[in-house]
Length: 205
Image 1 (cartoon, rainbow, N blue to C red):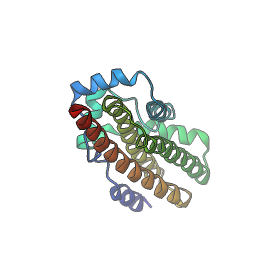
Image 2: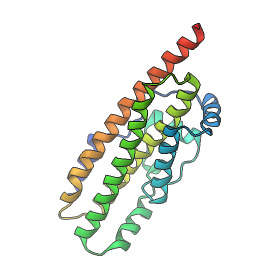
Image 3: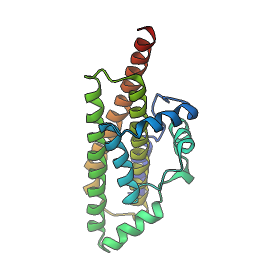
Image 4: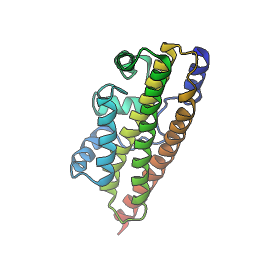
């Protein structure tokens, strides 16, 4: 089971999006703009807050940590507080099957929350939103995507450390989460392209 779970982990790496939307200095400006709280920013920020509250990930260390993870992927020391989450799982029950059910439920919630954020992204393509607003939304959305990838690593690591004889309840949930992450990655790339197009159009108008 341990080798199978690590194979699942390797199947979807934690490398960042194909797009790094802005340098840190520009990101600071966009974050300030995001304080106006668009619908996407609200959903994406709430997703990251939920992940931290539920111990799927550790608290974000700021924009430079975000940029490093986005570009280079998460290293072993970036893991999302696995020890905290595994303790939380063990507090729920001593029964392995019930522990697996608890993790499965969290995985499903993580996938659903990311899907909701992705649906908010799709709505933006039907609007005439400014490039500045789009870049602010993109930053929030990419942060949520990084959060999802870290959460996935936490789930896989904890399942492996528990060394369950049967983690089948989580198999389908993990597959769905992987699909959500893939969709979010594609949506982030599309949003980055759309923001660039809007910026080009605005500069020539």
